[in-house]
Image (tube, one colour):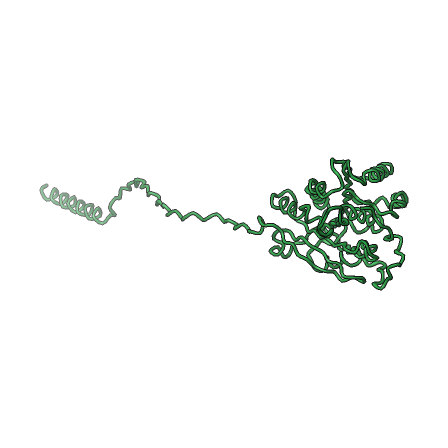
Amino acid sequence: MLGMFMSQANRIAILLLLVVGLAACASPQVTLVTPTPVTIPSPTFSPTPLPPIPTATTTPLTCLSQPGEMRMGEVPTSGAPTSFYIYLPPCYEYFTDQRYPVLYLLNGIQLDKDTSPAGDQWLRIGAPAALDALIISGQVEPFIIVFPDDRYWNVVQGQYFGQFLVNDIIPFIDQNFRTIADRPHRAVGGLSRGGGWAFNIMFTHPDVFGSVGLHSPAVRVDDRSAVVYFIRQMPPELWPRIYFDTGDNDSQRGYNTMIEGLLALYSVPHEWHLNNGAHTLEYWTAHVTEYLLWYAEGFATAGPPLPTSTPQPTVVPDSTLPATATAPAESSATTTP
């Protein structure tokens, strides 16, 4: 019995040893641990402020607050040369790509008790200074003014002044100065005899000027007899803008009032002013700024420049005309002062 018990004990011991050995050879049990989330802080960036960029400033052109420039010149013609003054607006020499409208202002003959020559009447009534003030203050856009000298008014060449203006002076100015050489951007005005020439040119060369100023005009005798014919023959599309003024004590008031009545009768658009004053430099001085504002208004509404409209020469009188020569119908008349 004891022997049998020992054999069983031995077998049990061997089995225990096998179980322990197998347990030792088995992989250890691993317990998985859920990781705790870790928050990684976002990097912070504090940029160094850049210095402020300076605001661009435009250095103002000193010429914009300076008066325009006056020059003198002379135009060769088939007769004697014709001199002129020309006003160039502020910064004309700086803005070399800019072109300008142009106004031709015609003088009268020498007035009673006036010791200065007639050729500078528009200068003496302050036209350049008045335009300077309007341009610098920003009331008008810049334009050029030409003051032709009608010094030959009392000799035969003076009878052809209108032809010289259209055939010689205007082409010369367009070629030598930066004008806008078309009708809408070209105007003519005159006082006294100069107004008479402006009246004549309005009808004899209607394609040249887009605005015409008649300032106390002394209309030429032959033109007076033809005024109804002129008005009736004018193509409606060629009527320019017209400014017409005279003083209530002007020696030409009666006839000028009659012309204004004819313009109204034939429904010709025009601006009429009957002011206080006489046929004097003082009267025109008082109204020169009004004149310039009116011309500037026409330029402002003229639209873009046309291709070109520099007038072509017509018949020019020969410089050897005798003093007794009969002038053509356009220019044969004399004027009252």
